[in-house]
Length: 266
Length: 267
Image (cartoon, rainbow over all chains, first blue to last red; front, side, top):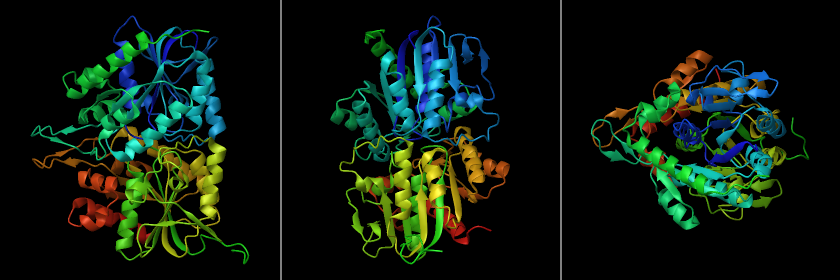
């Protein structure tokens, strides 16, 4: 980890809010600067979505003398996920906590990432083994911070507040919150609807109350789901979508945070 | 089967149904609550056991978020959603001091509490106990299957959304069910299309058709589609009874069919 300049965790607390979608697109966005080396580490051991979202389904990892080789999407963008170690799409990883922790440790220790500018860690929902372990194992290497993903409804926010409590408990800096699936614009009539209503003020109010930056709000674009299913970057597939504009602004904020964040190496 | 001394809190529960997914955020808790409300409307007494310890969503959906639990001789008294005691709920939420308290527990501690939930909630007589689970195939799921080993479970309801990113995880959950001997009642596809309230155009916000295809590929019953319905989201947010308030909606019909499928039980 000493050759990794910036480490960013993508967390939520709530499932299905778009952590993996965001992680993948953050990676694509950061890797669009070809001088930067970017990697995604998928520690969602039971539900690894990153291989599909990044167009790497069916890929396998290779072992060499220097460890496991991650799978490359582009020359400067690599990925590691348990998905690459499973033989078939039906294979379930039915593991208790300690075994999951062991796998995460192996990912951090045995993957030959090379020198990286950014390592993005995609996490499962919750505040449990995976989250405790990644914070613990990366503690010596200093994590830049966490991006927390939510959707506008209270049902999500109530879990996200717990995740924020977790971050504060383990002294994990919070880069900011992203509100996903903010608003839906009908492709036919172009009028907007709130599919997931912000009945308690959405992420905006929560961020104000907890004094955390709101990095941005991303509207619901059906093309996002389609791109993810097809393993393509939504940013390149739909460059003019308001969702792309929102993502790019958020990615810029994360970049600026990392540049201004002094990481003291061991 | 049950000892005379040992009060078996599940002995007067007629049917147990587990709601699973593998994928997060597909609507497991939503389906659990709407199924419970639909069964209640059909005259059944229903209990809900929420074993999502990190992200317990059910209390708010039934407007019970500020409640506490009390103990009796047989264990915890569940929290009732109504005076008639037609819907009972147990959730870790009721044990937390503050609603924002994070449950930052490793596997063994989660396993212990879930096993306690299984044995120590004084449900009384129930027609249905519906168990809401967190996403994944890990400690909570294993604890549940182990804890319910000596009981007959009607089966598992698998919830997915249409996209491949969801069905991919649900396939793994199907493997979990098969490996642990948990019968699968069927797959329900949630967030299946959104009808624009302005122009009535239906958009496939989260893609289309994945749930039915998955059911076909895995040889499992397809139990129908539930549309994306902001009125349902609103009801859940405010802890109101959607089933009572919107009986004319397509969403209501979808849940009614689901409840009927659950009542028919395993073939």
